[in-house]
Length: 163
Image 1: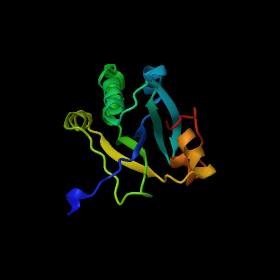
Image 2: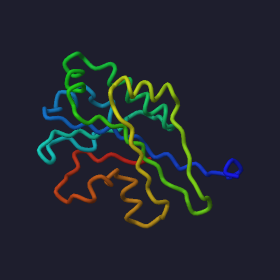
Image 3: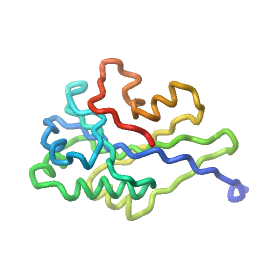
């Protein structure tokens, strides 16, 4: 019965890479440079945080995740130590959900992509944004500001954008 259900795929927006550590991540920001868009870099709740997304032109989830993996895999030994020591390393996949005409949304992550994320000792999260087209939702999609909306004391470093 369920095999016959037609599922409409959610619309892929982007992948954020969120890093939290007890140590400053400033040298990691410098090394990643213009290859990422920095959405936030600084201290939050007593931790050093860095939230970035790929500055490349990848339009598909697996290509974007792999591009970010390649950046981390290519870090210098000192920056790689910072990465390894971070207590939170998360690839956050952003999607616009499309439930209005279908009962379910479905997507998959390729095994090779998951393997690379696991080898970096990182996790995968999924954030679903409503497909409603209200002004507030458009702002979240353009700025990537959803993670900051609940905590007014957070500030954006360089605004990223949801595609």
